[in-house]
Image (cartoon, rainbow, N blue to C red):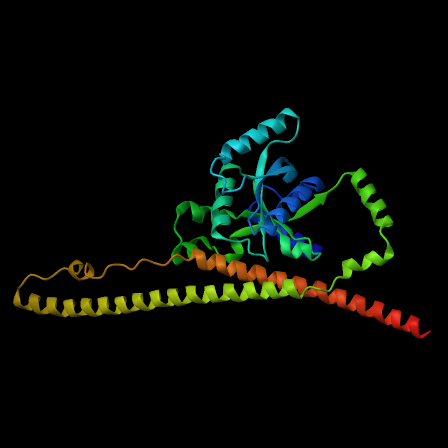
Length: 338
């Protein structure tokens, strides 16, 4: 697992060497977790700002605060953020804006809104990241906290505003190269680590089985349902693109047939000494077809890839729990027979 993370970090550094990893304080993580779970109970999307600084290609996140709810029209979001950061500066707390965080439900984090928001953040704050926290998966005992940055190809594509297949092919942009995942490390102070160790020793033995909770069917079911929905959406996008290709092929065939007919007619006119008709007169009759937007299909493919990775990771961890509980059950039965 560590080797896989190191290889991923090496690929990220080759494409974007602004930061190599993200270091997040435990207090900032707890604030994000608390805010995301509070908003998830109301089926709302939790978002907030990340504060910290960059030290030797390491983005240190030391604090965060939530954004006001979008339904509150009386609140000026930009003024609110500036006021909070100004007051944090007065009490000597890190106030530099280094990104934002967002809650996610069953891995549905990759979206057009996320891409647009991160583009504006990353073009104004070069080292900014977006931290995504999956509330449902984390509530079942699997902490899901990931940091992402847009790749240089994705930034150039969004800057040009050209989402045609030719633009994707030229920039070599695919669903796997829209976002680059940055390794994230949670750091606690020595006093916090000591306190956690003492709390762990105070935990009764009969409470330790909570870490072996096998009730993962609901999370896996939701992941599979979301995966099926994304596959259906991708199929609809593929149908639209196939129709576009059929229309373009039909138009090209008719245009070549008309040009061939014009060439034959021009040959007759030339033999009679009459003026020929230019090819532009025929080409004007066939207007170029507008290529469909492929950004939606690319994002949907990225969502499918994310769901597949989550399901694979979730199943592997669940299988490990099953083997552990099987050994414990066998030991318990052997003890009872004696």
